[in-house]
Image 1 (cartoon, rainbow, N blue to C red):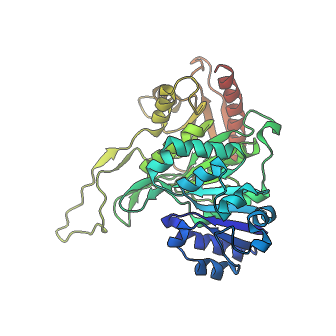
Image 2: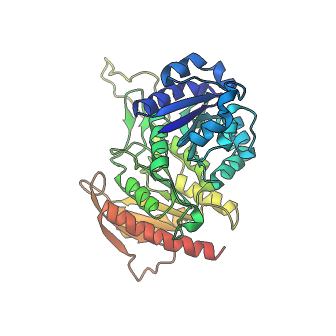
Image 3: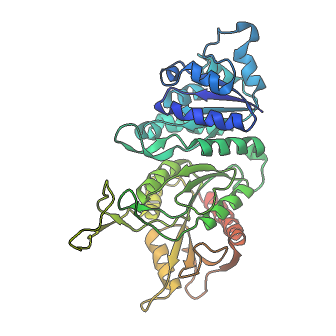
Length: 420
């Protein structure tokens, strides 16, 4: 396969060398087109050595080969990593002031952008508008990773891991979507964001507070949404299984990182499914070094503080945005055990009312129940349910249950659109 790898002018350009290696080791012929700015970070010699091809950023090199036309025409796939805010803006505007933007205008196959920039740049309305413009043209723009950025800042804006970009790029070639208007069903061409896995809250560089979530149910929901024709953004905390092929993968670790990713994703999502097991609490301080056993035998004292309620915040932000605010449908998950005060269903109903989401998937959890298992049993709660009539129960493998949940999501989403 003939791939063009565009490299934007950001510090993350060095990571694209690993991405190039993944492409070439998979047997692809890769032409690297760096921007002039990117060559301040990684030089031509590196790209030529790793690709085995001549590298240029100018339309005036090898004019006889008409590279500004030929490269885009011949490419089976174009990947731009890192895609800076400037490069996204130029691509959205259709500019052609260097070899890379010329090639993008000539593209006939799939095009994928992997953004990398500071959090404020990614969240800026101009960047969000540019991303929306590109996506409306059928271009795949991944969500950036969440975590440590240049300097001491942290947030959304990290270049996704090269392995994740590679997987998304291969899926873009293998599963090239049809135009949204030709696909059947209410989720066809829609953006569904799914969170999955369990967050981990660090105590020190070695230890963390976590939970038993495997990510299996979230992965099954993502696959079911893909089968329904949706474009799926998958925000993954710790998982015991790989992310599904064909999703836009965003990796997070902590509840605060997941919160950043959800807030960044929600404005252009049609459906938000919060299947991740998010820690309710985190340590108020994290030690920079491993916590040691003390010679005097004293036990360490760990003070926990409350994490933000990400699901409730997503609902509040939508409410504040008015009738046309997105996502149109928000689905929460609740893992309950029941106790002497109330049973699992009662706690689920209380949570649904407290969170304000459109649907709530209720699990009864415990030892050898739900977490890590291949089968499950859930109840699907809605604000319109009558307390005298039990909510529907879905039981079976997690794949089967995910398909039934997505079928209900399709119904609720269509109904939500009809009243807007």
